[in-house]
Amino acid sequence: MNYMVSDTPGVESVDNDIMPINGTDYIELYVSNAKQAAYYYKAAFGFQSLAHAGLETGIKDRESYVVIQDKIRLIFTSPLNSNTEIGKHIDKHGDGVKVNALWVDDATYAYEEAVKRGARSYMEPTTESDEDGQVVRSGIYTYGEVVHIFVERKDYSGVFLPGYSKWEPRFEAPTTGLKYVDHMVGNVELGDMNKWVKFYEDVLGFKQILSFDDKDISTEYTALMSKVMSNGNGRIKFPINEPAEGLKKSQVDEYLDFYEGAGVQHVAMATDNIIETVTNLRDRGVEFLNIPDTYYASLLDRVGEIDEDLAPLKELGILVDRDDEGYLLQIFTKTVNPRPTMFFEIIQRKGATSFGKGNFKALFEAIEREQDLRGTL
Image (cartoon, rainbow, N blue to C red; front, side, top):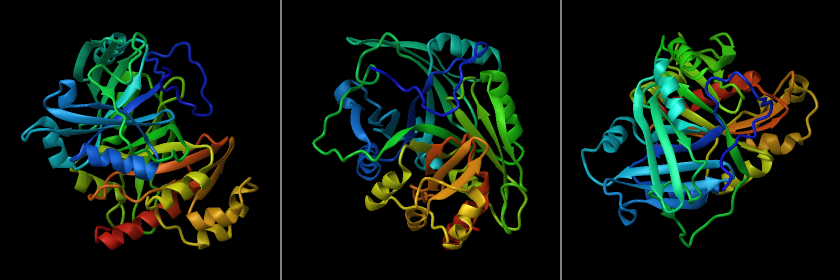
């Protein structure tokens, strides 16, 4: 089975990469009801059933459902008893990302190199096996309670991981064109952004490829700062945000308040046809931030000629930005949890390798309108 190489544009091989990473292996979310969460992501986002683990597969303390769409795999995990570490995580943070798993050729080397360079151990190298072969996994802590698990699966041909069985329920919804994880954004406390930038540089050999300060990412009321970290081959990109001084509470402040600490703010998922994908998602009940019509009045003057008609972009609320390499189209969901914490970005790159700097003001004003409705601005 072929697993998870990112198709991110601009990827180049790097001979001296100290931490070779093939791509995102999976993202695991701790949620209060894994079965219902899996159903939602299937029905609303078009993910397909892949694997299940729980009492029926010999696991006594938790239940997990795995869904897949092209190269994106999500795990939803819930505890089966009270007073568990998973349950405490959910009680504190609500539903959210616990694991961002990275596919590597050698999980033991990745772990030993990361720990040698200063990472805190989460999981020592462990070999897991069944009749389909073996997988080696190891892990380290990052910001907040988020962890990276290194996954080595070259000797495994099973459906997902040992301990999981194939999940084949009757219900499957059509896919929506989501292809791979483009990037994942973390929110950290004020003053911690540079600490975690240095962590990714020193421990995993990432490089800072972009930086935005409060002049770039601000409105009349709020601001934040962000630095984008990328691994050697460009397949993994982690923007890291921290709040900045503003007249009112920023989206990062709101996140940190309700998540009760640092964590994953949003996951950006790529598509080859954002108009079709977003139309599909919206028809299935996914809610997106509202963008005013005035944004589109001067859009083409700002970004130049694009392949898409303006009318459907305006109708759907899709944002457009251009850099030296091309342009991109992006849109952001409203928060997907009761707490105003995690959301998703849908992105289509037409050559652009940046992150939509020209859209920051419109995006943040849209988020502020949602904050105002919640009374948290």
